[in-house]
Image (cartoon, rainbow, N blue to C red):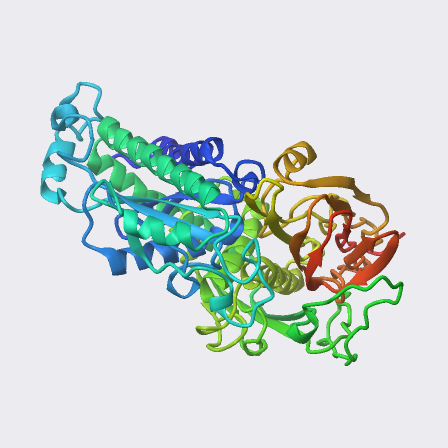
Length: 591
């Protein structure tokens, strides 16, 4: 069976093209700005065992989480028939947080599956030694999905206690509608009862229906393209190359790990606060700053790194012990804080996503940037997460912020540990937050609206250059929503959108600057801010200074009031939210 380097390279791009074309379809047909403008979605191709074959360059936080969704769909919804589509968002059954809705579709190969005629494997242009394989293997495996396509999109509202479904919650039931793995399309026929149930429990059913239809359209395209690959090259060659690419990715990852200095490297970082008693805040027409919680000093671990010492109430510790031994890597989070009563809890799939992302970045920086992103790249990595911790919370803990904020701090902690092993490769901490903003209300014509966005900030400086300014970093790989699109879609005005000059940490190489975004609402809304790095600053490395923390404020009738990093507000027309995002840490001492 041909698995030479040229054939493998061709199939690497063929598999990736399936996920990429799915993404193009999803973006072009979506309704919500969060998907069609910010590109808050991911698409991927899996083999028949649920192993990742290819994921387009979409959202890193979905990297390790989507396989968990596919496994859950297979376990709970088999057997499958052609035309089936499974929907789920349950964080405790393969999801991340409730707004991330995942669809999983089996791809059948053989007669009746929408493939080209079964004799196509006899074509003269079929690969040598593979003619007739499609007909023979297709007959043997008919009725069994040999591939899966999946998509995950962040929906702007899935119900719950506040518009945008990113509430400052204390249990998952407050965060929105929980969807266990269930068939939303059964043998090609829409399950109208499931769809009706979903749409009845969201604030913007028309937009949700449009976005779900966009995901379904992406799946149609993905399944068609996958079958076309098999029709052209034959099933045997396709499956052999899929297995070979997984083995190849594992070899490259093991080679990179083996070249790292062996040893155990420890690092700790902190989330700001989870005291939900301070989350809901009534703003008065006063210039008195919002009182801060009682301070409690937290001693950082002994380190030669420039780790900031956070001083705030109830810090949440993310502790990692990274052990490099031979060609394998162990990432142990024992010692991290227990699950919290707020929404910063994460599930295991989020932790795995963050770890895989960090290792994939390092493997690329060590000369393997063209390595396939598939299940083989994860094989040499062992992730240890203590049960019941903030990184492996159990139901019914709230998790809305774990996917967006805790994931970023996991990256900071893992990169901090890697910096001890590879000090001349790893950059300083980036902004370490997604600066989540959700809001919603009712238009003058009575139509409801809901919106969600994340905001960029400063990237950490590295050994070779300054950090980039005003970009999404690490686990957030979205775009911003253009001002024109935002103002067209919602009753608001963007008063300022600019680089926050001087917010990056000083050093031989300076950290990137954050952003300033000021939004004036033209109608009453309920707004929720969910952000981090408002207390603990993004760390610098090798003598570099930390980046500036983020700041939130409300401007009402000309009076500015400071806001905490996490707050829910009832805003009137004319109120302005001012958000200043953190800068990245600096790298190296100034000469």
